[in-house]
View 1 (cartoon, rainbow, N blue to C red):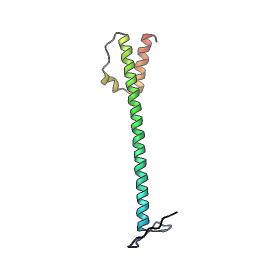
View 2: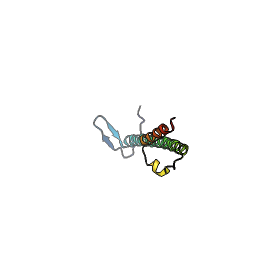
View 3: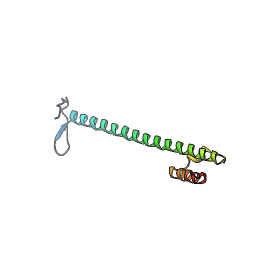
View 4: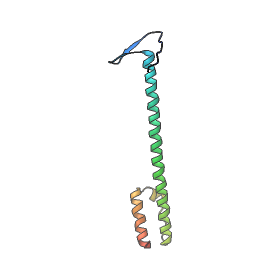
Length: 103
């Protein structure tokens, strides 16, 4: 149900199916803007969560790689070098180290 708004200038705009007063148009634009901002915030929150999860997984894998390297009495691969790797590559490195440890 549409709320009636009074417009002192009584301007109207046609969208093809009905005529809207300037107040109605402004109200609709405000609603659309609000929904757009909410969607944008939700997308940013989802992207942040995805990035956080990836960072957490990388950190866990780097730690496990360092534990394996210590167990093999090898020099530790610098964290910076490991954090430049993809999750797939980190998993492959860990798998190779585990095979060497026979775990």
